[in-house]
Image (cartoon, rainbow, N blue to C red):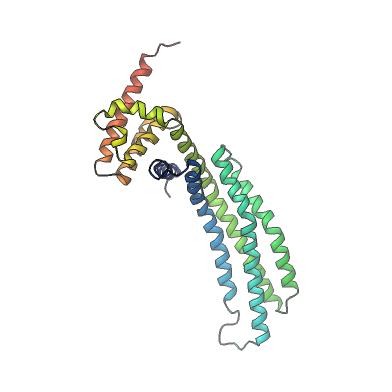
Length: 275
């Protein structure tokens, strides 16, 4: 599994590019990236619904067994009830999921995020599962088939919870780092451009490719303003981004500019009077 920090940097570069080149509002571009991250969790929940739907379509006795029409009709009704109950759970959980990602993007609220998601899923499941239970209790199907339908629904909810356990914490961390990088790089963009300008006098900001320009802004923000990111890590990640999304010369160009920036920043810190 790829490190969430690398994913956050890649998405942050995309957001900065869209703001810079596409003139897209920063909030709109950032929200699109956050929705993409949340989409991984949504996909897992949707998959649980579809797997349950497929399980309910399989005939219990096999295709060769004669089934009265009334029983076939009732099986289809019960299968639809199971699918609808799970879809209602997914729909009821959606606002909570969106809120969790918005909160994670705005604050470092990661410690309880996965637990909150599980609790919210449990609350969203209560009503639809209770209605499904009543439907099954009143069904003409035999007990074995009714209990099978109930187990299918319960397993689907368990799969949703497993998705949250596996994906939500990492996804929320990605969302938080993405938001921090984008907001910081945009906040200090003009300052960063001024600091980089003397280092690229022959190739000013407006002449640089959009990818190179925004990789430099993103990395310079991490190097100059984020103490939790080791400088070598920020530099190496920036070079990899440039190589992956820029031209053949982008990696070398970004490495040279950032290395000069790091050296100059270290020199300035060394010259500062000690307390």
